Image (cartoon, rainbow, N blue to C red):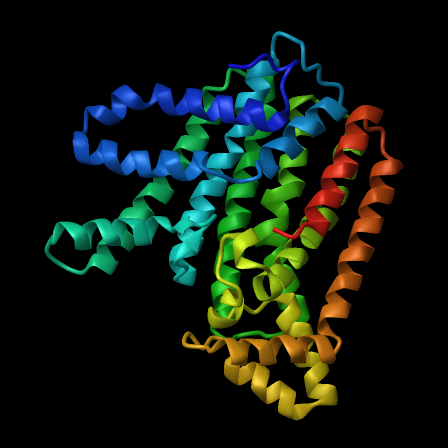
Length: 361
């Protein structure tokens, strides 16, 4: 592994993940070549891209709470933080199945890749069903391996005891948030509050809030700093997802790696759409009907998607979401500035927060 004191967080995480996957080679090989091939798909999925946001927040929080990147235990902290990337892999693989997404980071999604393999080999049964089944299992494996990577990270018993309940809460929240999301898509609740609740638990908690808390408890931080991290993390996590909502409708596929307008086709009950429908109900019933009739329609023309974009802009929904992002970010940065975070780490967290909420990818 790279020396923790001499490398950037992303480099540290990449090295830790490669090291972990290598540690599983012999065990996987015992199950035969087909399992080796399948697990290679998971390994490539994890290593081919991603911003490593979650491990970076956890690592920087640890530094901000007094952690020393040149200490003997720093490598163990890196491994513990890097385990978050396997939770992320599980979430993405399963999310792509739920959303019927065909690309991720510019490549076929895992379930599509396995369906294509089934089809090319002319195996019996449904290629689509095979692809989804294989991807579900690999997502499950990623979550199991996340637990293994944390447990085997080398952190001491006291740190492991502190981090365990936070880790458990995070896993429960992200799965609960996903369930809330599919219920919202089923049309059970189209309110802004419901959409924000999904954002809070499906994304904000495991993207920023819980990783920051994990970094804090690994450093045995004081309760007031841990609380500040959680407040900062909740606000930045929500702002992060609101930016993602905008990119899901207006993003450039060449930059995001996903088809533009996918959120509309998939019927995502995002805050952007909830605000749009609320404002349209008040100001333009015709626009409201267009939004509701379009949301969740798979075979949408580019012209129809362009119509939805125009409505969301004209009705004021885009401006509303941008204001929410700005307000959440400002509040988070104020919380960070008033906290006892080590100054260098605080500066890094500030930069990460701005990058996460103003990104175009």
